[in-house]
Image 1 (tube, rainbow, N blue to C red):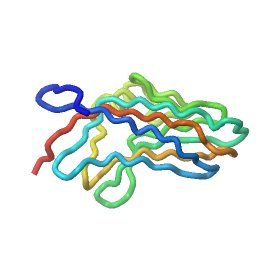
Image 2: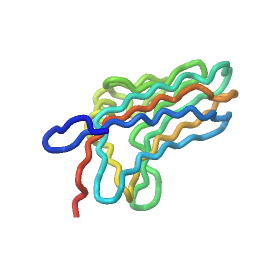
Image 3: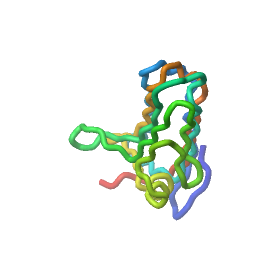
Image 4: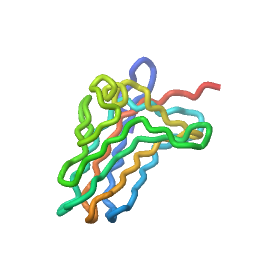
Length: 153
């Protein structure tokens, strides 16, 4: 759904909220992959992942990753929370037990600085890992505002 145009670029919003259960030691990956010919540049992220209800051990984490040209994963950000703690990205800050990057300025750049770019050949994924001792069966809210940029030739 088109939202607006800023400096000639179209902005769009997508809700990638997931509700499928993630078992202990399970992984859920949400792709953020544009069609060929354009790059999606993230302008803002909102994410809220509650602690798996009833967990008593372990942690859960969210990684924002992409494949680089060497076919290895590169991470833009990692949020890790111990059991009993929510993972959150809101406004310009992260909320987790461990946050990479750790400074608020770096977190702002990841979330709103336009450094996360997803292309057809190098798509971004949001990888959730449940390292707790119970199922994560709640909604994992993920909302993204992004700019559509024609891919350079």
